[in-house]
Length: 373
Image 1 (cartoon, rainbow, N blue to C red):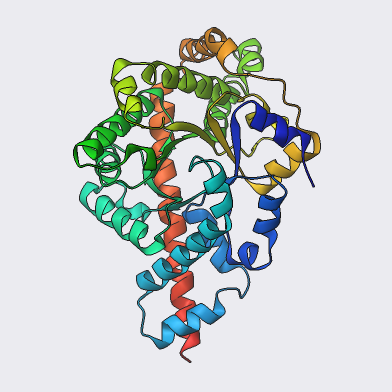
Image 2 (cartoon, rainbow, N blue to C red):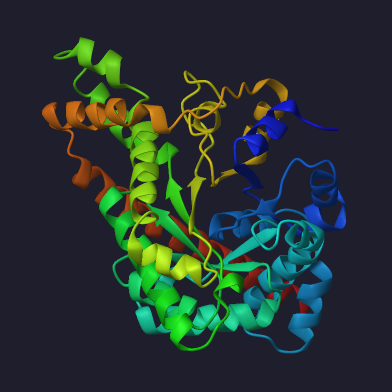
C-alpha cells in the first residue's frame, strides 16, 4: 500500500515517523510492513509508549523470565527490555538509514525522565543507552529542561546523536539549537566526524492548544468573539514561529562554519501531533505544519487519518509568520501569557513521563516477581 499524502509530504521535505514502538509491532511484522510500504521512515518512543507496550500482552514474558532467573533488578530489566526493542527497530530501519545517508531510519530512546533535572546523570545514562543499543541510527532523547541543555551539548560532543524532547517555548527552542551548535563545535575539537552526528528537536504541538483553549473557554462569556477567533490556533502558530527561529539560527555564520565541515542541521520535529479536540480536523497538526527539512512523528491513529484523507497543499509554514505572531500577541492581550503556558507545559510534561516511568517500573517489578514463583 502506498499513500499519496505521505508521498506528498516526502516531496515537500517532511519525514514521517511513527510515534509508537512495541515488541508486538516488531515480532508481528507490522513495523516492517509500514517501512516496506514507504509509510514511515523512523520511530520515536517515550516512557508513556514503553509503559503501554510492556503492560499489554505477553510479548515480553520470555525475556522477563530470563531476566528474573538471572536476578536482574527492576531498573536493569527495564533497561534490557527497552534497549532490545530499540536495537531491533534500528535493524528494521537499517535500509532506510543507508538510503538516506543517515538522515532517516532513526529510532529514539529516552533517558530516565527522573533525571530531567540532573545534568551529570543524564549524560552518563545517555552514553549507557547509546552503548547498549550499539546502532548508528539510534537517537538518545534528552529533555529540554534547563539542566538538559548542557547535557545535550556534552552528549553530542561525544559523537552521539540526540533527539531533544519536551520543547514548548521559542526561547527554550533557541537555547536548544545553540546547545546543539556548541556540542558540534566540541565534537569537532575532539576529532569526531560531524557528518555522523544527527539531531532533531522535538517541538510539542497539541498540548499547547489543550492548555490555551482551556484558558480561552474561561473567557467565553466575556470575549466570545476573541475566543471563537483564537481557539485551536495557538499550537500551529507556536510551531510555525519555531520554524522561523530554525531558519534564523541555521543561516548564521556560526552554522555555516560547521556545515562546511560536514555538519547536518538539527531538524525540527513536530511531536504530540495527535489531535486532542474532536472538533478539530484529525490531520490538522500534519497538514498545517508542512515545511522543508522537518519531521512529523505521528501516533498510529493520526498516520491512518493522513493516509486516508490527508490533503497536502505545499508549504503551510513559512508564508504565515506574521499571522502566527498575531495569534500569540492576541492571546497576550487577552491575558493568556505565553511564558506561563509553556513553563506549565514543560513541568507537566516531565511529570507525565515520570509517572509513566514509575508505572513501567511497577509493572516490570510485578512481572519479575510472578516469573520466579
